[in-house]
Image (spheres, helix red, strand yellow):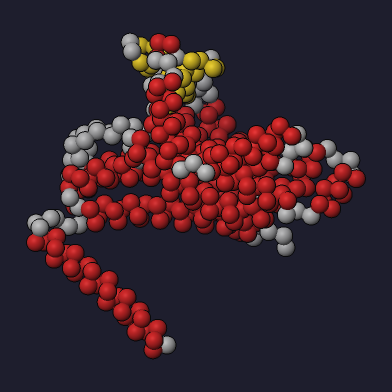
Length: 361
């Protein structure tokens, strides 16, 4: 106990000495300390904004814009990389020779090339290989792909969508309260029906709006709809394809860990290969897949900080600019560390909760 107390005291003393030394050096260099700079005008534009932003906004608002951009690419990336990695992992075990070899080539090629190089590759492909807006590709109606990015239709602004969001959140809170009171959650079908019903009622209450904001060519670029920039697309493609290669191996090993007798028993019952995979193999394999899958999800979120290399304005890029303008590097780096710490711990907690739910008892 005495040794532990001395060790903790030594660590606290070292941290205190470092802090005092840093404050003294900052004071001698006439460099301000604290987070008061967040209320000052930023005087720089953020390239992509999910909320209204301009150069006249504060550093705090610019930080919020960058944070939302990080959450945007991370949220979409987590869903896409899980789906793609699962499909490729299943393909690695396919009885079709060509499908299995193509999946193996993909895994070996993608996971052995540094992610940063892949980001540069995708950015070059999008900005150099794709045509300009006037010759944009249109793989689907009212969807346009060019070197300016991807343009897709979106629902026109309406108070109905805010009401739908509030209704869904309220139902989720009620379901959580009911689940805690019952000491077990409601059946998935019932919970899903309540969520869909609440959203549908809120939508109908505002007249069931269905208007779309469709992108259209205006001058040298598209207007309207939802735009995904080349930087966002390059970052998303790089993160998804790189992380999916690792998830594919996790899925493959998880499936192989399931006792072959389970597959034989399912075949004896007359189940099709698709039903065997969906109802017998994957539910058992998930118990082994989820823990390493969580690590890959965390890696994807942390790797999103490479966005600064291709100009996507994520939270790291915005705070880098803030540090260059204010000179307050300690506060800026601390904010970056805090953002990724909170995001990763939150995701880890959710995945651990899900892992506990699917364990056999």
